[in-house]
Length: 248
Image 1: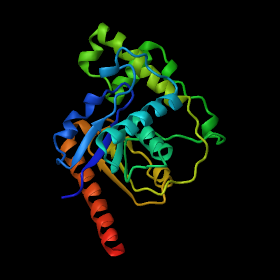
Image 2: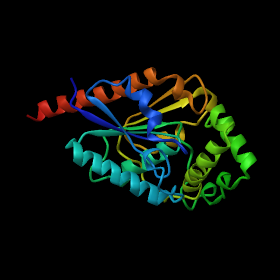
Image 3: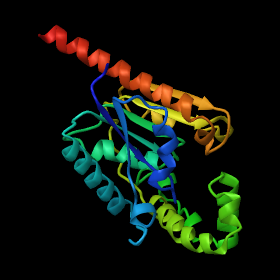
């Protein structure tokens, strides 16, 4: 059996740590899911949401470091969906002294580095009027009928989601060199996302899988998603163990 591994999971815009509970049900005991809660929701609902990507990333990095220290477990991977995928990618770079051994990206948005033509464009979904903002979220599948039909839930969720969008839309990173880490990308078939953008972000192995559905495809495919994550983590562990035996 592979050694115990932590899987830090980072949520989408407006999402909470509880979003990943169905995924945990399909993981083996050696692969422990650690959902990261962002400010303004779930267990941290009394905190104000954060609309600054760098501050958000530092918050996540501190929680990953804390989780590793508490567990005494050095082996970990990161998984993120949508906004969480961008955070996962950035944390892999930010935590370069102790990087994850694998980066799982689910429906990652395309981001453009600072200084490029696309990178200088203004993205303003977070500034849309309420009606247009909610329609956009509904079309993405990010709001359930329960939320849409509840003014109280809208009042609670909207500031958090807007802050998350603002964090991503106002962030223009430098043009970094690729990471030397394995990447696995997941997406919904209806999203039709280009793979070349993310394949170019790593010199490590790159794999991609498409599932039936749209941006929130994963809610209907937790079991299959878990199987692919487990296979990637287990394969990498076996390769590392074989290399260690050869060195000895």
